[in-house]
Length: 96
Image (cartoon, rainbow, N blue to C red; front, side):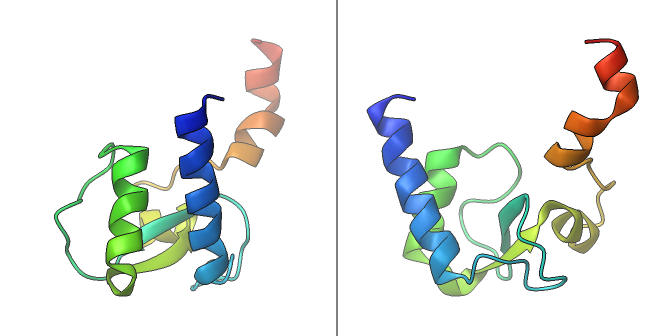
């Protein structure tokens, strides 16, 4: 990991602590994401890791912390598999 990524990881971890390190809906502590409660200039998936961290730092009141499942349900998206489910998926392991 380069210095820039390490810096953003440290900043994101601080934000996770500030937001309570668990999903506000179900209490899960895995696959946590910052979800909009209010629209900001940084919207949509794929806006960039650094931009999202910066936006949460600037406008924490506009975000909540959700696990990926609750975030998908909130945004009416198909629910993605969690990283832990992908790793244990026997079909995926058989094709690896």
